[in-house]
Image 1: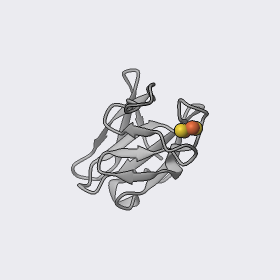
Image 2 (image 1 turned 90 degrees about the vertical axis):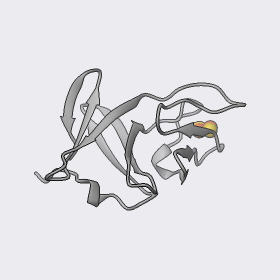
Image 3 (image 1 turned 30 degrees about the horizontal axis):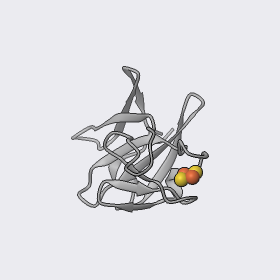
Length: 108
Ligand code: FES
């Protein structure tokens, strides 16, 4: 199995992975940071991985809610929150490690 690496994601693009049965969207910001949130908009379940990334936000492709990729918070005037995951990149290999509820997972 090939582990997902920082270089596998293009800038301002996303990749979808599963951790157990949870669909996760990984985004690469223009500064190279990787952010991870559940791939499900809290409004009506839009696939956030298909949204437009601008700075550190993603706009849901269905009804344009704006979600902060740093903490999963929906921005005003809308309300809600998406599960966000801490992401670390191995400085030597570039492999991505995600933390969900204090469990560490290698992205693949
Ligand atoms: S489903 Fe995301 S804004 Fe409506």
